[in-house]
Image (cartoon, rainbow, N blue to C red; front, side):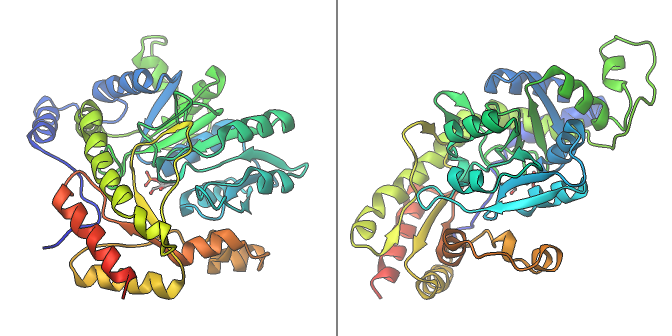
Length: 377
Ligand SMILES: Cc1ncc(COP(=O)(O)O)c(C=O)c1O
């Protein structure tokens, strides 16, 4: 029996939607289907402005241009994060300042971030790791106190909320990913969520190669022209057609993931009580989307034993993130900074179990039994 780590749930409805888009010929970017999806996302997340883009990474590129991030600016972000954030910050000539995470949720630590604020800090950019909300109350207060932009990396968090509000909509900006590994997929894709109408208007121009084509499509101008700097950051309607079906299926897709998550969580409770692994923590104010299930082993050695043992059983388990502050490129560029104890320990001990709608209850129970056996070896 083989249990893949991640696999999208795609069926006849997605095939039909893509075939229809092809038959009708409207597969360009910023088209009718994409605009329908944006409206649906606005409604789903109760967001003011939503722009579909080819990836969450590019949502950051567009946002940083729209906010006017500049050389010399500093952005606070966790070291335990995907590389996209750091690259998008560097692309503006700004500097990522790597922060420590909290032991409990593996999300950015507000106290650590506060201690790194300087007169050059422009933005705070926490991640909602595993679709579980970071301490948004603390980050919102910190951003207000120091007049900083709060950008939520909600790449993993479609369908999650904090005190009833969708993740990605609480700060000044947020991004969500529709990458093939996410809960709702377009293959590649993402969206940028913005609060301020002026920033949203700037982002709309940047996304359309520096032109006012979006205003033209709404009939607000009779032709479109070059009005500022920009790039090509629109999502093809072919992918938007696929995404539209996936968004219609969001409850079913999230429910299927939650079922697997709950089997893991209940099944591994005893192991945690015996001090053999640490299970994920979901704070009371978060409703999470079961994006991923990550346990922590006691030592790096135990982690390697678990990964090897699971793979030998045909169970694809893996780990991430490699701390960015300790990556060769970061050391070459910024020098070897202080070590971040919690980040480094998490990266050394984390084990991610297979989680996607195709994992059956039997599969999930088999994974649990295998983890328990390996922990008692
Ligand atoms: C936390 C986080 N941020 C950003 C991204 C980038 O998303 P995309 O692949 O859509 O660019 C990912 C993707 O895995 C992610 O997990």
